[in-house]
Length: 480
Ligand code: C5P
Ligand code: ZN
Image (tube, rainbow, N blue to C red; front, side, top):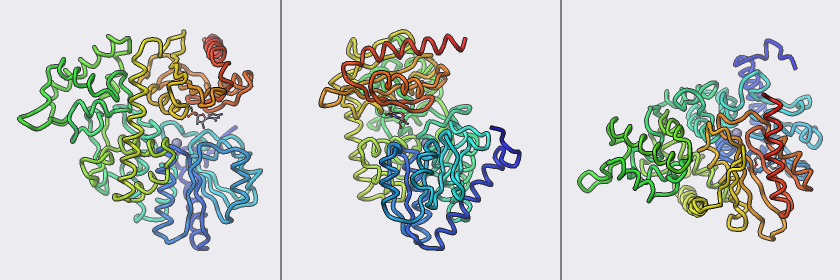
């Protein structure tokens, strides 16, 4: 589809954002309750919180609902639910036909960065970087789109910029040099820095680098996932010892920010050796140095201080099916909301730690040609499959492999499968592959180019994985 010049690029995007803000202002002045529908991950939670905070400040009643995806049932439910305008954030563009069919007569805004499928009906406003030749994977996230819309309300909304930074990092948009955010995301970074809310520096990206003992900071880091070290404090401790790095100064635990440049280099070299000795790509250490975004107003000992870790906290809330707790924290709750979020994080981390410990056992992780398969079988909860897949895949950047994780549902009749193309991975549309294959095995699957899921009959798993491996091979052969 040709894109007309006045729609093209940043200018065009900003025009759409302004139009959306005009619509939102009109709704605000009518005072009708507004429904926010958003996606169940850190980006979706921050996106919803940006709109919710804006409405809260303007004393407009709103309700927010977080959903994993949209389907006909969900749209019908929305259509028969409370009246009034609806804002979709971080979700919607890929379901435009479904939405138009079910909600065509409603007032709707869609603020998203997923690839659009279909066109919005007349009267709706869609803000999406793809409509302007921009990149939805690294130029701006759902939270970024939401932020650029509320930013049009005036300077008093600019303190919401850190949420856009967190959302973009949650969606792994730190794909520019030194793991920095770029494109339209830069506007939020500049606003947040300008207000003194965020500091940008270059360092090791370990979580809690100013506050935690070094081995803990290493083990807490999940973006990227460091195989054998993330979630495994004892291994992290052993690596530090091997690198000859003192963990304490007198009686005080040293932190990553206490390390000298020479010590940091030694640590990275030792981690590279550790990874190589376990058959992983040592290149991963390049992802351990980069741009760090610190929320300087947050208490140093909380996971809110480092924007990547804040995103992980929100992801935990989402995965533990309590996204509302994440929204409360984003909207400023530092008492009960934060307390609950911290306990969700702890429970989620210990579940993940059990999964990753199990993955160290022989036979659990298997390489099948271009596929890396994690056999979650019956020991992994089907509810952990997608999380494990996303985290493990972040540690497979540049490996050229595709990751598949599966586990059987409790009834033993179905399997939940997640597939991921890691950063800098092969250029294939894993969503289309999973959708077609799942249908062939009497299941349901889908997703986008780098992340997809499926649910199929349990006894088809081996055949499904074999067929996926073959389909990958064919897709690659067609490319070369
Ligand atoms: O479940 P999982 O997180 O692995 O799914 C990855 C992506 O694929 C998500 O964006 C999810 O919404 C999408 N998906 C889909 N249809 C399915 C399963 C997953 O569109 N049947
Ligand atoms: Zn997103």
